[in-house]
Structures are given as C-alpha cells and as structure tokens.
Amino acid sequence: MTDETVASASPAPTPEQKVWDVPVRLVHWLLVFLVALSWWTAEEGEMQWHYWSGLTIVGLLVFRIYWGFAGPETARFSRFVKGPGTVLGYASKLLKPDYRASFGHNPLGALSVVAILLALITQVGLGLFASDTDGLESGPLSPYVSYEFSKDAGDLHEDAFNILLILIGLHIAAIVFYLAVKRINLIGPMITGSRKVESVEGPASGIAPVPLWRFLLGMAIAALTVFLIVLLPTTR
Amino acid sequence: MKIKLFAATAVLALGLAACGGETPAPETPAPEAPAAEAPAPEPVPATASIGETPADPVAFMKTRHDNYEDLGKNFKVLLDNSKLGTPDMAAVAAAAAKVNEYAGQMGTWFPPGTGPEAGKTEAKANIWTDRADFDAKLANLQTEAGKLVTAAGTDAAAFKAQFGPTGGTCKACHDTYREEDKDK
Picture 1 (cartoon, each protein chain N blue to C red):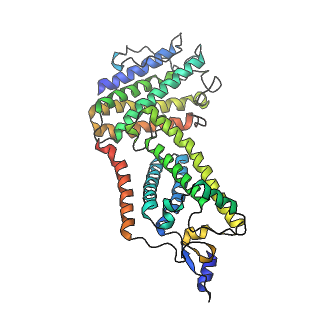
Picture 2 (cartoon, rainbow over the protein chains, first blue to last red; picture 1 turned 90 degrees about the horizontal axis):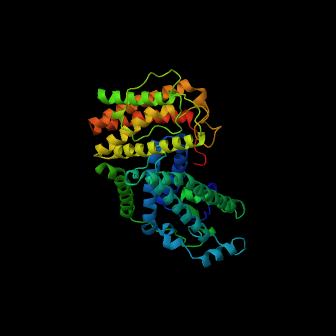
Picture 3 (cartoon, chains in turn cyan, brown; picture 1 turned 30 degrees about the vertical axis):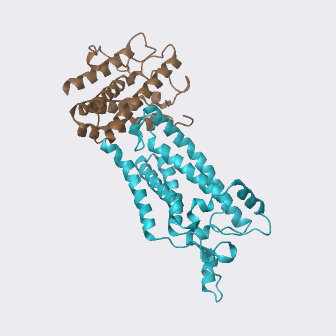
C-alpha cells in the first residue's frame, strides 16, 4: 500500500494495474467481518444478530457466485479455477527464480477460494435449517424440516465451523508466506484493488470495467434470495 | 382458562406428590397422561421436589434426558409455528399442553444422586446445592407454560406473544444449571 502511494507521487511512477474490482473487495472484507461477527454472536448467544449476520452472508455468497460468471476477469471462476496439472506446475515454480506472480487468483490460491466458498455455503446452508436441542432458536427454514434433522443440522453447523477455521488459517498462512518469503504483499491489492504492473503477468491495463447494470442485477438477485428465505415461512 | 390453569396446577402437584411418596419411581410419570385426568393432589411436604435417590440412577437420568429431548421436540413445533403466518393452532395447542405437562413434572426429575457424580449428564451440580433458586426458576417456567396453554387456546397472536416469555424461562434455567455442550 505504502509503496503504491509513494510510487504514484514519484517522478517515474510504476504503472499499476487494477486486479480486484470494488465488489470483489467488498465481498471479501464483509465476509471477514461477518464470519467474525457470526462466530462471536454464536458464542455470546446473541442469536438474533447471528441470524441476520448469517443471512447477510447468504446474500454475499449468492452475489459472489453470480459475480463469478458476470464479473470482471479476475472474479470469474472460468478464469481462475485450474486443473491439477496447472496447480502443480504453479506450485513447483513457486520457489524458482522464474516465478511470476499471477494476475488475480493464482492456481493454488484458487483452490483456497473455492474451498472457502464451499465451506461458507455448507455453513450457511446448515444454519438455515438448524435448531438447538431445546427448540428455542432456529434458522429461518427450520419449520420445513423435522426436529431431528434440524438438531443434526445445528450440531453439524457447530462442527463444520472448524473446517472453515482451518481453511481461513491456511489462507492467512499463505498470505504470510507470500509476504515473508516471496516479498509480495497480497493484502494491499485486496484493499486498494491495484498492483504494480511489473510484478504480475496479465494485461497492463488490468481488469476491464463491468457495466453497472450487471452489478445491480447481482445485488437484486442476492437481496431477493434473502427476502425469500425470510418471508417464505410467513406465507404459510 | 381457569380450568386449564387448575389442571396445570394439579399436574404440578401430582408430580410433587409422586416424588414425595415412599416408593420413588425410577421413571418420571408417564407423559401420555392428559392433564385433565390428573387425580386430586395429595398434601405435599415442603421438600417434596427434591425426592429420593432412584434405585437405578443411570436409567432415571436416561429417561430424564429423553423427556427433555421430547420437550425440545415439542418446543420446536411451537418455534416453527411462531414463525409461520398462519400457525397450525391444533398442533400448537397439543405441543403447549405437552410442554406444560413436562413443566409440571420437572420438579421430580432431579432427585439426589442423579447429578454429574452419577453419570453422563448436562445437569450441573448446583441444581442440588442451589435448589431454592432452581425451584424458583422452575416455578417461572410452570407459570409461563400455563399461560402458554391458555394463549394457545386463544388465538395465533396470543400464542406468538407468549412464546418468547415461555422460552425465556427455559433459557434462564439452562444458563445456570446446564452444562454447555462440549461434545454434544
């Protein structure tokens, strides 16, 4: 971050390329905040907050999946999800002199993105149907399933959080590895959206802008999903 | 309303009476007995709710656990319906009656020798050391559960309004007297 600020002010600025658009960054940091909030509210028994925190995550996930098809290049699954050969090829070059940073998610990091998304989907999916053993607190879709199913979903919801924690731990460890060993700051671009162009492959101009309507459509789909989940039981 | 409240009181008194007897039942009273058929209660000694150590504490604790699970199952019926636009009031009334019935029996569920020292249980030892407070919290549940039965017989709005206060009395007790589930 600091480097970039200095660079833009110096006489011969290093050109920057846009790597992450605003929606991708917002989804990322909101997930950081809401996963922490969800954990904390669950620990404290603040279930009404937990309920809304989880539902907001549902909305973010719906949007992010949509954005994985409709967003800019670096947000698209088709662009960053790679086969085992590419992943191994990238991993084998990681510590070699001819290593080049990736434009967007690297093939190895893509695995982390997909794993964390799947873990989050599992987590909120279980939460929607979960209830506690007392039948005192439950997710919005719990009325559609039995006590036993709901209770098991609740237990799994609690257990599966550990999987998410492990994945988050790996993610942070990787960030620290790049920072400490590779001297590549991945946190800055996730905040500012930009990276020095010399450090990465890909087009110098960075990601192409996406029409606003596509973003708004994604927001509408996400909001509608959450509304339906909340309102569906009240129509019965 | 008065009849239902009376029935609830009768069930409670019956539960207390059953525990005060010379032959402690290893199992809690049959949950099937409808509240209305409860026989007239016998005089109950002040310490009745404590009861005597059952012959088979582990079996007793298993029954207690199963009863709480069935209570949870009935409470979920209430929770589910509290979220619906048009609650199934027949199901609500049945579940509320069941909750009220269990609430009435609950004073007999914790005789001495059925705590953590006797086997696997989430019941904390302070149930037996802070018995007066435990009983006071139980009395709150019984009051609210009685109101819940009345509300369930009134209308959906009354039921929804009474659902939270009833659940609150469950939680109040769990917060103090139930072990956090560490391994479920």
